[in-house]
Length: 481
Image 1: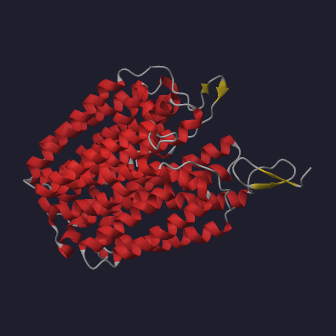
Image 2: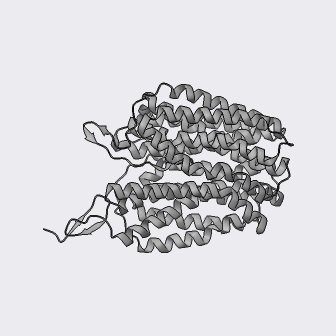
Image 3: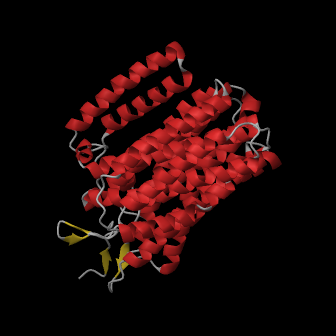
């Protein structure tokens, strides 16, 4: 018998049955993974409050500011369909190190950008790197903890890191922009990225595994989503041309996915009404949450004349409760099934959005901050149970793919929501903001109706499928970040 054996996580373990890394190594790996996930979540929210300052530096109008956000979001979302497979092929530790290094360098490029096109290009590079970091960071946590109970606790900490980063993002963005400059929101990523790479040196190396890549499907997905965002943001003749490209690329994507042996989006999954309802609900929640943060970041500063720091602090009541609400939602889903908390969450979010219709330029800022809380809590209450329902609706061997698909749908929807609502507010801010609130409320009302059709049985975070026990840990979409 060999003196060493290889564990399922790709680690080489000493003889004697200990198939996981040592505790110190596991803690280092978890710390590195948590910091990376928190970093990419922070970068998704920290930029919004700094947008007026960026606009003052470079100009570019509303469309330019939309691209600063959407360049990151769309690259992140569309590539997330394939980066899980890339992480397997390269090995999680190598993929994570590469993604972190590129993200750090791209952050330096953002901070040093001399104009808006360079900043937008660097944001694309950040989004590409973030798409690699996210699945690789979760894979590192998975391989670091062979014991299911310890792994569940580790994933909970990892997810909490993302929620905390989302909560701190607007405040950090406002503080850095006020005390330093908008460039500080990017330079602050550099020491964090270096710390991650130092920690990663001590982490065990991951095995490479064969994983099929659907390159034609990935390319057509990126082309369709980018063209669609361009059509919405830019408008005019170029917008119509981009819309035509989006339609052609979208049709090609669907055709490719029907014929691929290993598609990035298995269309057959949508025959299950639970999959359809959960993906739709996740998309609607992201439109409401991400787009409202974008719109109200501009509202506080451009309409009410608040500072960047004050604008960031206005989001603290809504974002600070997200992590706690996620935990409550998970417990409700475990006890009552996913339908009840999903309905409660979406209903609360609709009420919150309609309450915000009364906001105008003269509404006290504290009142606006309080009115944002129900919408945010509703979104946070919806996401964990819809994730549980999605994971229970697919075979265990497709759980990772389904998680990536759900995350991608949520990120893409958030990015397109910003594109649409940015166009609406550019023609009259308060009127466009109210129309944006109505659109978001209608989308959530539709997904509320779809969620009514879900089964009321308890969601099995560790259920059975095909006669075998399936122990699943919540994927990245288990947080409202």
